[in-house]
Amino acid sequence: MLRLLLIFASLLFLPEMAMAEEYKEDFTNLGLTGTERGIYTVLIFIIAYGFVMAEEFTGLRKSKPVILAAGIIWAHAAILARDAGVSVEQLHEAFEYNLAEFAALMLFLLVAMTYINAMAERNVFEVLRSWMIRKKFSYKQLFWVTGIITFFLSAVADNLTSALLVGAVVMAVGKGNDKFVAIGLVNLVVAANAGGAFSPFGDITTLMVWQAGYAEFFDFFALFIPSVVNYVVPAAFMYMAIPDEQPAATKEDVAAVLKPGAIQVCVLFLLTIVTAVCFKQFLHLPPFMGMMVGLSILMIYGFSINKLYSDESFDIFDKVRDAEWDTLFFFFGVVFAVGGLGYIGYLELLSGAMYEGLGDTTANVFVGIISAIVDNIPVMFAVLNMNLDMDLYQWLLATLTAGTGGSMLSVGSAAGVALMGTSNHKYTFFSHMKWTPYIAIGYFASIFTHYLING
Image (cartoon, rainbow, N blue to C red):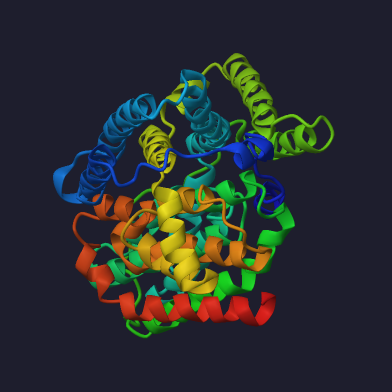
């Protein structure tokens, strides 16, 4: 019950806009997309993102090429601005806009990741994993249990964390049955991405949409049923291919128990969410400040654990160190690389080609398809910086498609890339691609459901 309460309470918050709307209205780009230097920056971004997509094969972490690309792009943007007679103050204003957006979101995510790591270290997730193993579900039962847990867990923890946590269960109980593991991990990727789409707290794309002020918190719950459809439709097809067998008995120790302070850490996470809400609603301060206050309380409580339990070692800085820094730095590189291209004028050019040429609905559907190839973070950040004049229905559609479109290919989301790296080649690009047509059916079915309910 506490876990369910925590999930519900965690959905009650997301960061608000980091910069004032007045700035967005006054922001102008250089309009130098046709220059040789401008085209060069696009080529740099494409090459960098090629390395991101090839991470599975090269082993080069995705943050490294995009941070380098961001630096090169802004260096060229500064030269273009100087040649165009733009003042240093105006250049700094454009640069600091991207810095403020990244800083607010980074601090919010860092606290959330730290709490997730603290709960994992206190065995909160290991107890869930042990319970599932002890229950000795059949493969067919395990398919639905793991998928549904991932769907709702992703609404609180991000899709990467959810997929990795439950993926460990699938690989543990599916040991010796590679077919189940392959299908089960595809199921988790779809469930994680769908679950994050209806929760403002569940995915960076939803986080950015609310932060930009295009939708209020409770607006996102209108995507719950479309998200369920997005998951259930392909899962129904995959379920028919699951072997009707019982997993072999495991010798793994499944008697995991909660460490001292585990429940208290969960409660502190809930109170941190509440604190952040209060900072936003009553003090009108950026909500990441409330998250930082919650982090300080966790630090103090960690100190008390060490004092009360002599045999326990709880170092909060270990939890901060173990945050997904590759993801946070990747997001830094994406924000500044895309922001630099936008400053040169490419986002306005892309906006005209997609949204003015194709129309909002068609363009938003293509946003999801692009997200299957390019990670949804740069895609959504680009959309948000196009300054589009769309209504709430269209912004929710963009959120749905960007959040779930990445499920169509294993490289389309962080969850898929991570599971490819941890599955010991049982889950691969091609094992996922086998189910792409069925995932695409679920994708378009969720869009149609969104139209029926919210159109």
